[in-house]
Length: 239
Ligand code: ADP
Image (cartoon, rainbow, N blue to C red):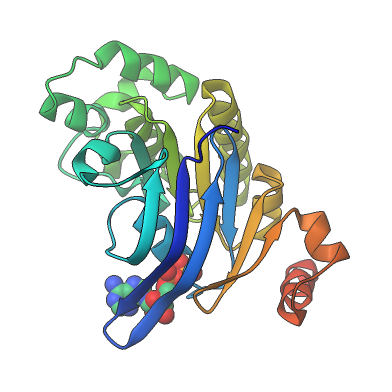
């Protein structure tokens, strides 16, 4: 069997007296998309941030089969995308995209150009500042930036939530194609069940810092592990 991209055992996170994550076990297979879903405050972002090396946790975390001893090395193999792009406002799109490459002394200008093409960004948009771009364009820049170092994994925290419905649908399509074309492992956080189902048949449903159920949407429907699973599905259906 191939190695897991991430393997989490008994991972927990506390912020002072707030328990953000209760002991969680999770294996992330390479080359596939896994979706973390659940209501606001259920611990999805915290779990993603643990895998990005941004939050300190208790328990055991393996990346590509080995315990992480140096996050700086591991982080180069991880692309991280947040809502609305998370771009530096005082840098142009191109400067945002090439920031890390420049810091590492790598010439990734050609790669950035190819990725911009793949995400349908126009060359002149790359010379604009984030405030001069639309929400969809900013998010495209955020995606290109995350892919520039050719990471093994993409971590996506509500990447489509700040967008209007048409752009959101368009970018969802593009993002899914990019992940599949480039063969990346992806972990995507969302509170939308329809978005979750669009991206993957491997969903991890969370509540209150715990994993309630793992599997496909169909398995949630057919064999809910907890009444909360049914409640969550029905609440989404109503909308
Ligand atoms: P989700 O992504 O599912 O909305 P989060 O992982 O952001 O949930 O939050 C899980 C819990 O941890 C919530 O109760 C939230 O208030 C708390 N929390 C998250 N980040 C912090 C922080 N930096 N400091 C204190 N509490 C936090």
